Image 1 (cartoon, rainbow, N blue to C red):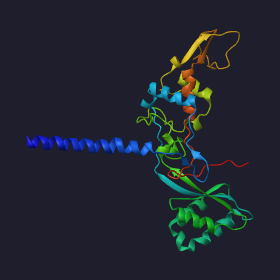
Image 2 (cartoon, helix red, strand yellow):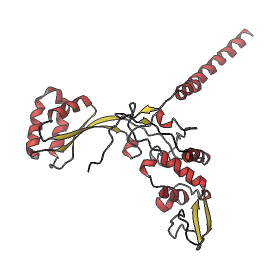
Image 3 (cartoon, rainbow, N blue to C red):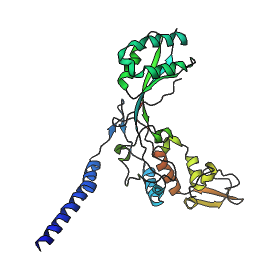
Image 4 (cartoon, rainbow, N blue to C red):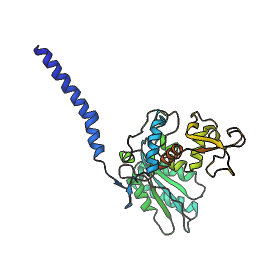
Length: 293
């Protein structure tokens, strides 16, 4: 009897500890999550989803989209990328010689071989990635050393990883990305691409609607099933409806009919377009690429 009570007590303690660690603690942690600040900006993140996008999350969930797609971009690390953008009055060969004269500095020794290789293959075209290194301190020192009149350079922080190389996002996913999601649709299988940043990669609502109705119409090798039941096929009235899908002959309905999205299709697309994890945060930094006129 004594042993039985001890076993039951131990089981209760073990299960209770597991529940606290796996359920209670994460709930308390995420439950207290607040808006965060965009790195080097007064803006806060994330933005509240529109009502249509919030409804779309439920459509996404109801259709089991998380069974084939993830919403979590993985990252291996970060690198400092020093890019040369202007030479001023320097000729490329003169600048190479100037840079090589800096190799005597002991602080630059860890990257001199990489610099020498980069400079050897450089034909003088700009912009030019002068150096990529995981040591930002060294990148800062080199950036200061080449800061002479006329020479311009940019030091960027670049997130690295296989998911980032695929173009799925500019940084890793963090808890703040899911602040307004209930439930969070992380997913665990990638039968299709990750969608954490799909609103930036494919911002065209018409493309998204076509993809839902006839995936192969926009991605010929797609394995995604069609979600035709989110659309209505109806007779054309006096004229083709403005929201009717523009389908080629292979996917178009019978003559005299048109395909229009239902409210559920529009809500799902609104949710997909709201997936925009594309700002740098303190816990997931990167330097956004800006287009200069």
